[in-house]
Image (cartoon, rainbow, N blue to C red; front, side, top):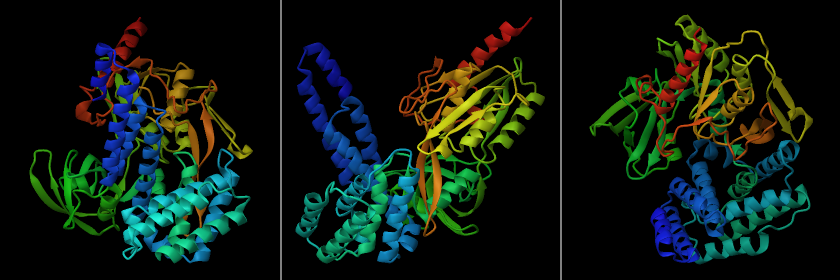
Length: 529
């Protein structure tokens, strides 16, 4: 619709402001429809897209903010560990948790943050929770009228919105006061209100910082270690269709049981998941090692299938593919899916294998790689860059200021092409920045994501964690590409909505890889005596 409007503007010369008003009104209406249906992820994508057209519109900005808050609340209440551990705390324990979180943020977060700002976001989270079905259903708010809910929300807005706080003691007093008043007015116990201040307050931080429930903390450590218990699937819920399988890991229960990419799971142990959010559906699929789960799904050919799967430990490989893709010119290809503890070892093994098979040049693929351990990025870069700074970090405290440099021993000096795209983030961008600044190779693909910050994980009581941005990282030339990303040397246009799925079968037709092979073949020709 927006493209059509732009063409109309060019042809008729109609006032741009009127067309913008119509477009904004339609965008706000469509976003509200997603929200009414509790399709928070769809609402977030919609508002983001609309803000690219109207970046200064406040209604769209708050729609995006509101949808994010609601999605976080839904996810908390779909997380079994939230109910089993945190909602069972006493008032005193939950207030101590709030104090602990604020203390760690004041001590370690990369930017200075006031208690007033943190608690204002907590108040906003409570305000939205009182209009969130998952929250209200969990706390049995059945006998409360809409008028009472509106009055409670109005009280929050009128009396506590951005209320100045002089320090932690006054902040604790405010939170307890709000919790007591809502308990009196609505019958909601104080603990879930205090917890909204803990979780909601963290929305005052950047997009990469958050409070982690015991379950989410376990998941994060599993990703770092490269192993977890489950079926071995990458999934995303799609309303009305079920759980869309984006990818199925090799050597996994899912693959062994017949699941494949582009399947749609419709039932889990007999429970209909056609319209369940991703996190809620995932909680049904996950479980202890050795336990069973029955699935019903529609395969890519439209066939309705069922099967029983046994959950077990699944290892995620950092290097899922390493092979020679052009034997005549010795072009090797190595896909790096993430940066975890085993990455350097896997990288070494893959390069050695490719060298034995005749590698003369290398395509290193970090497209879709969301990052991981900074140290893993440094270790693999050290294999391909022989000297100089690889990356540096700068934080609010001196212990976050580091410079990482290369060592000449063990360097592979083969010609290099690095593949990047809009989902290459964090540690992948450390790699891209170093390759660019050292002129070590050619970057091919699309502009990277633009996440140039370092997160640290802090343990918190009740088996929880706090992920905080503690520093920003800089390329060897001292550049930080936050919200900018790294531009490729050679742009290969591609539809951003198309999900990247790299398999050994797709290597021969992948446009990025074909361009990389072409560049390396030219390099080989120029190097031939």
